[in-house]
Amino acid sequence: MVKVKPLDQIKANYTSGASVAPARYKASVKTANWHDPAASDEAQRLYVEQITNPANQARRQRKIAAVANSTWQTQADVVGGSRIGPGMTGAVEKQATGFSPYRTVIEGVTLLPKTTDPSTNVDNRVKPIAIALHQKKMEG
Image (cartoon, rainbow, N blue to C red; front, side, top):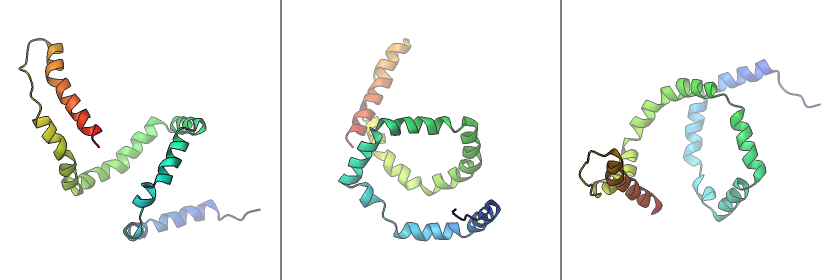
């Protein structure tokens, strides 16, 4: 029989570890290299192999079904709500840099004048922007 610590001790160790986790996490991130292995041909081959495996596709659906939407909402509210503001503030330059090429595409679209027909307005004013943005996205 495998000896495992009692659950209350595991919970206490987990709780006490939370105070040192941020510093350990930051130190580990500085030395980690996820990019090179993830970008490799072998990683891509494994990804394609696993994503097309019907058993894995079924597992995904089972795992999603096991989480209630209310659980996700609570976590998103409690955890995400406190993190989103600082995360966005810290990513202002990244967002601007990432959006800039799409902004340029939108500015370059010539729109026909508005009409009184909503369907015509969608065809003449929404679709050209959507098509231009899609083409930009497909460029890479």
